[in-house]
Length: 418
Ligand SMILES: *[C@@H]1O[C@H](CO)[C@@H](O)[C@H](O)[C@H]1NC(C)=O
Ligand SMILES: *[C@@H]1O[C@H](CO)[C@@H](O)[C@H](O)[C@H]1NC(C)=O
Ligand SMILES: *[C@@H]1O[C@H](CO)[C@@H](O)[C@H](O)[C@H]1NC(C)=O
Ligand SMILES: *[C@@H]1O[C@H](CO)[C@@H](O)[C@H](O)[C@H]1NC(C)=O
Image (cartoon, rainbow, N blue to C red; front, side, top):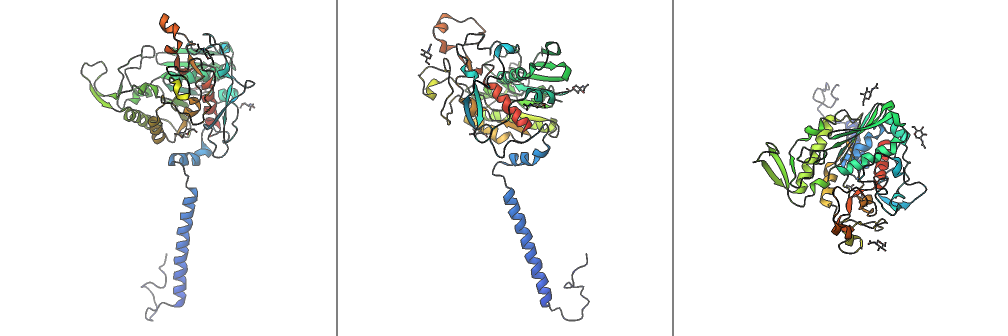
């Protein structure tokens, strides 16, 4: 571009006096520049999402989000809501109709006297959500792999997903097989699999054996996500969880070198929070490296709460979820079994492209939904235990059908209507 006439290259012989016309042009230019600057500034502020940048990024990405077929009503938080008694529409399948439920979760079969826990439907405050459509879900999985990775709570969610889908498939066209840490449900005619991979810490640990993993002195190897991660590569939809195994009530042991079996180990003890943050960061790093956000979806299921202290919801001391048949009604209920500092770590670290399934609060209300004493027992009960059912009630895991079907319903909503 040629410099304007006011510049030194001016051909005019006159002394360099700025004419009123030039002043006009100059001020017009300055005003225009200010205008542009302000305009930009206003735009930036209008677009500024009050939520953290990860969510804003997710918003602009929505148009191309894989698997999406619609949107949840603007700004609706589907995880904030209430439980509604709805026996006409719940449960989503019958316990005897799903042969895949492990005996630790079949509460009716193990003598639970009520079925009330099956009849609650989750209703978000801000909007109504589409029903779970099992044919849509199964059709979407054609030629694809969906995998749940984590601990026994994630295994429950995995089984719930299989139960929600399997009735569409005739017996001869489906199978369930276990290969060490990996369990695979196959819908043959769809060339689809729904899989579960046991990795209670996501990272390599001394609790990785899929069967023998009841170790109280838990050790996790730093930065070792690849060890298990190589079994997740190529998956189209992946659902992670990890929480309970970190809650040892003491500092956590991280292995920095050598082997778990070495007599002398390079162990560093860190706080639970720091150990958990380290694992979350490893997960995010793995996802960014291995999962293509234009083709895949990744979810992280938040902490699953336990209900071991009845006194926290107004019950008697020394009791727990045993004999509970109704949800907690206090919308602000939060029990001490559920660590808020871990929630904060999740909030800080889990970001786009991982979708956070914030099921903690809605599950906190469900003191009635645990397996309690109505499950297969690993070891015979003593007469002392039998005399005091509170002493052996499982207030961590959930009956199926039940609460975890709702987790999958919300996963369905976040997958198809992000
Ligand atoms: C999870 O949902 C609850 C209930 O809506 C909300 O109070 C909490 O802030 C959410 N947590 C995160 C990390 O978004
Ligand atoms: C469920 O999904 C299938 C396949 O996409 C579709 O044909 C059907 O109409 C859906 N059903 C409902 C009730 O929306
Ligand atoms: C079957 O699914 C796998 C992914 O799980 C895919 O790689 C393969 O191409 C599919 N086979 C056919 C015949 O489409
Ligand atoms: C269970 O709760 C009911 C009331 O909800 C009570 O009548 C009953 O005694 C309780 N049973 C036991 C064994 O605690």
